[in-house]
Length: 140
Image 1 (spheres, rainbow, N blue to C red):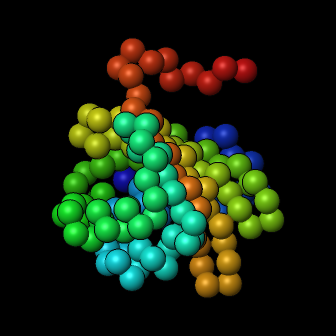
Image 2 (image 1 turned 90 degrees about the vertical axis):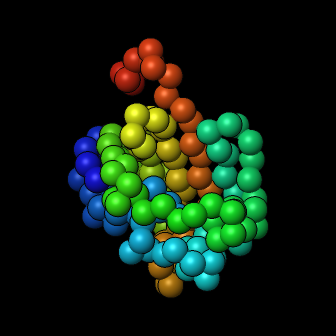
């Protein structure tokens, strides 16, 4: 997985390194592939917005990950991550952003993570498809 660090101050590099290794969520074998592991890594009120724009509850995602969709390991599938950014939202809460390339399907991803005594937990995730003609610059 390729990692380009952008928009991150030096004080956040250690947190960025920890979190970027966990993305894309639900697809890093080291951090889980079972229902119990996914339950431990997500907040009880976790939810996400998929590339379609639909909202999905934690229960729906957990059910889909463990019953309907075969597990995909991002590294084995050749998925590439890049353009990471990190913003601290609170004392132990962070917004991680990045781009994911799944064999030509490019999406921008945003995940809100919270660190607690028992590790990292995902609070929210969003995926947006990148249009082919989109300019990758960030307005200033």
